[in-house]
Length: 135
View 1 (cartoon, rainbow, N blue to C red):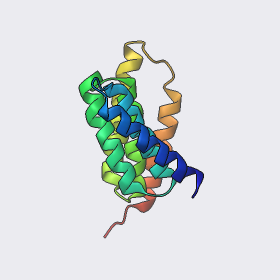
View 2 (cartoon, helix red, strand yellow):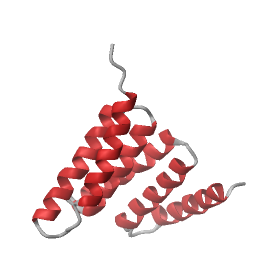
View 3 (cartoon, rainbow, N blue to C red):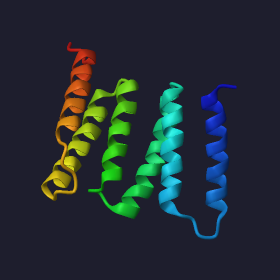
């Protein structure tokens, strides 16, 4: 059993415990989903990662709304999953959503470094362009 498999098993057990508690902390539940998504992504299990990230997205949108830093980071992760699945259009949509949130946070002075995201998006969109097949 690989270290990723061991970590996944422990996180899944942790998630079961969290779900069984009388007062479920939704933020912690979302974080567990994100971590499980990351482990799945690292193992190359992109569809499984997508399921975990989408679960986290539903929780985070309910807890924090659309313009929160946690949503922004999650949209980058979702963009990467769709990129690995070969769905550049959806990947671009999530990268763009992340950029929109980032721009709002910068304008509200909640976040100041715009360079990182610009470089990240530029690199990923270039990768998408490489995979686009024109008839």
